[in-house]
Image (cartoon, rainbow, N blue to C red):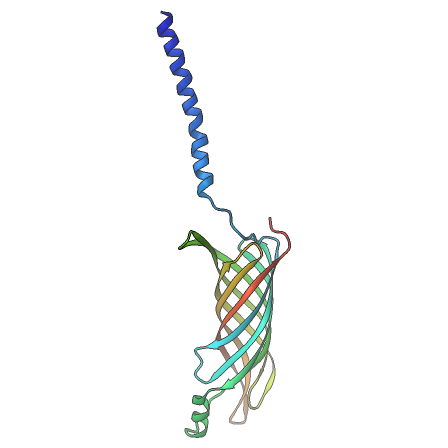
Length: 219
């Protein structure tokens, strides 16, 4: 009787030890599968100096730059300000249309803008590159309102303006990110047509490229 009883006790002890190890092993697998996010944005100030150019405009070429300052209230949510300046050149198509075709084209040139912005980042992910390199990225949407300094051949002044766009951040470390954004600017321009003053919505699409610097301590 003692030998069978000893076998039963030993079997129970070994089974209990095996069950006790299973949560640890599962927990270890879960921890090893989760990779730490390289850059934390919550409660940090993002400074984004950038260059910008207009796109998809056959008549005017715009080049410039600006500075965007965004306070990240938490991961994926930020508010801030954007100040920018632009220089504008007429394309050959516009010159030909005015000089040879005598076309009446109402063109407006934005010289600068100040915008209050809100931004959300609904998508975060990572991509594995050759050589076991992992690239973390974030897709964000932003919208804002403010004022734009504009001019035409007959008028100039400060106009109410709107902006909105979609962008991508590629994180380069715990304090830097490469940022690209495609968006549009829309403002209410005052024009003189046939001697009468009119207000029309004018705007353009632009491409922004820059490097974001994150200041302060993230959680």
